[in-house]
Length: 405
Image (cartoon, rainbow, N blue to C red; front, side, top):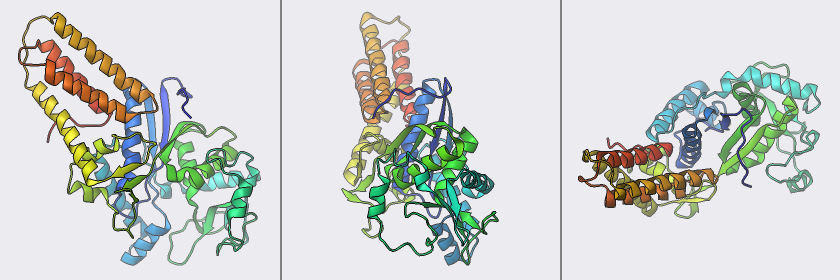
């Protein structure tokens, strides 16, 4: 549901966004939350908030280990390579670096400490092989984000337990720490040599860099269950405080109305898209729909986004070439300025209605139309500059670069 945003600390926003697992180049599905929540951050900053924005890199994972073994190198070689590539793509999409980009492998001690706290409080237990599980039924509110019921989940599981999870007391329990396997990186812990489960990472990194309670937690809707549900359970049981005040999840990205998958041959990395389009077009496209809606990627829609962006850039370029006159603003020009101010309000109202970037873009298009009709070489310099700077300022909030390369 929509709620009025009230920060924990007045004038500040503490925001955590789940980042990618770095085993390959990022794909355009990864790009959607990066672009969208970067825009959310930009809008808060535009409104005068101080934003602390944390987005992690998962740099230890089965896929990373598999790729490392295939190449005959250490896992950190793979993760560092693709962190660098990810940052390059982010820069090309004009996604600002996070305040902090923590990496899972650099936060292991914090994970061990939180897991031990959960064990001490009776929310986790150690199996015979050293695996540590979270005791899901120990958290009475489990399912409050995804609206899933533990008993229904239980009946949905197969009777046969997953190999290697024989030590579970309940099929709904999930892994906090797991023993090492041959050829895997591992860390020492009180329970066994091993590595953390995926879910504990974000709980620990959010706590370290933002505190026990944060304002906004965001990510793709595929993370609602089990990842974000498990984060809530871990964090609230360990910290005895509410975890996140607001949750934001972007909708899925489809390709030509089909789910993106390698098996269908419709899987695109951001780098591949950059060979066909300026990544500002990709950003413009991603913001052309409401973030919670599913978004369909197609050549036609990208062409429409390219044309739309071109309209904006052409208008700004034309306005920059207008010197204008030294005359005072006429009554007609004052009326145009009133329309400009009304469109700024429309833009802000759209963004404050659950970050409706599609409607915000339409306000920019109306400004462009206003400029094309009413701002000429004969206009006063004050009007020409006001319209130009307003378009540029609002585009900047959306992360749209108005200067041509």
